[in-house]
Image 1 (cartoon, one colour):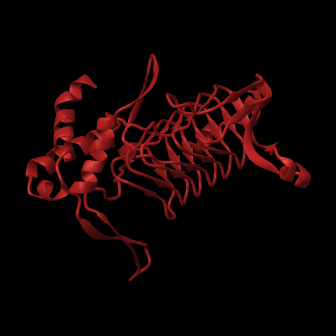
Image 2 (cartoon, one colour):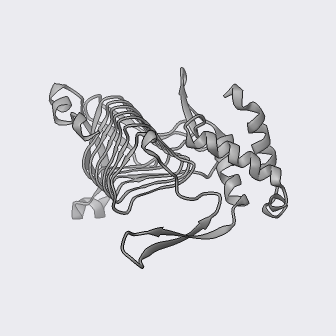
Length: 287
């Protein structure tokens, strides 16, 4: 991020000011617009993967929040194609809808989807309706965002990921230093899954239909005889190639045992093999 040190210092300086003071400073909005242009083309990201793992770029999150402080409420309309009919919305003027061209290489199928400015969708991303991508999100090449899926603020989604229908990828802008949800390359996420609270899903993992994963839920690894948990120093990490399904564990105590009560928990039942690869193969023709 060395090339952007000067911009980072500007963003940090303006972020320390109150909203009222910022409204009188043209330089603050100009710096924000330069920042947003880099966010839009994927040059800067809320989190990046290096040799030692993922690092949160807190200044990028602060730049996004700076845009919230700078913004003024503005009414907008999107024409529906039906004469005399349009869809209205109200949002900060700093965060309108993102614009795409044919040169963007992104396929957004019509029917109610929205992509917010300040997010990045790489060429060959496909978005089925209706779906939503929020500010600060980064979605890499060949990924499919299926119907009713949400990619939350600052979420980082890798290459050739399939987010099936109804998937919810949680967002995070606060606290500033929190790790966003990260889904690495070649992950398959089944329908109606939810991944929240800065969980990191490593490469080639498969998240089965209906699985809910968040930082407060332990993940029981039957294949390796261990339990994966979030700690004070690190987020919950789903290992590379893990196949996770929805499971349950019994509750302790006389009352729970008397009534046979159990509580939901994700369970790793195995790690990817050739059979799994065949079942989760992506179809190039769709991209």
